[in-house]
Image (cartoon, rainbow, N blue to C red; front, side):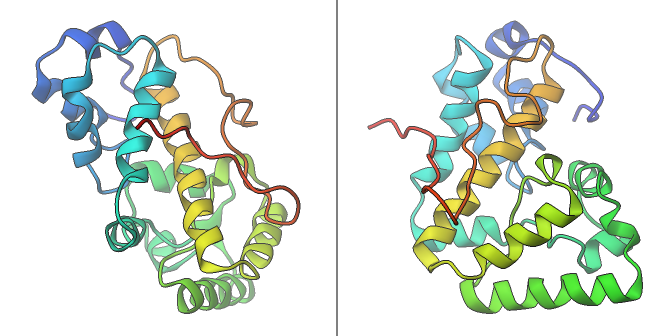
Length: 203
C-alpha cells in the first residue's frame, strides 16, 4: 500500500489493475478498503470529484446499522487512541494539526467527557473534518452537535467523512482539484443554521 506521501495520477487509477486501484485507495476510508473495492468496476472516472462522489455514494446507500458500524471505525477526537498514537497514519496526521495527542490532563478530561456524552447519545463516535477547524471551533461544533437529533447526526457524520476523504484523496493524487482545506466545495455542516448539503446520491 502506498504511503500517505506517495502521489499517483487519476489516469493511472483508471488504467491500472483492479488490485492496484484498491490498494492505492484502501486507506482513504478509515478501516474500510471495501469502499474503493466497490467502485473499481465503475472506471474510468472523469475527475477526482466523480471518483470521490462514487465512493461517498457507496456509504450513503448503506442501511443505518451498517453505516453505524462503519462510523464506529473512526477514532474519537483527542481520545485514548490519539494519546497512545494507535490510530491510522491519516488520523494521526489530522489530529496532529491541533495537537490533540498532546492534551494536558484538564483538556483530556474535557474531550473525554464530550466523546462519552456523544457516543452515549448517538451510539457512534463524534466525527469531524479536523483539518477545517481550530481547537476552539472543534469544541464548539462538538457542543452544538450534541444538541442535534439522531437523524441529523447520522447525516452530519457522513458529511464530515466526505470532507475528510476528499482532502485525503487530494493528497494522494497528483494535480488535485479543489476543495482546499477551507472546504470550498465540500459540504459543510452547521447545525445551528441551515441543514448541510450532502453528496448527491445517484439512483
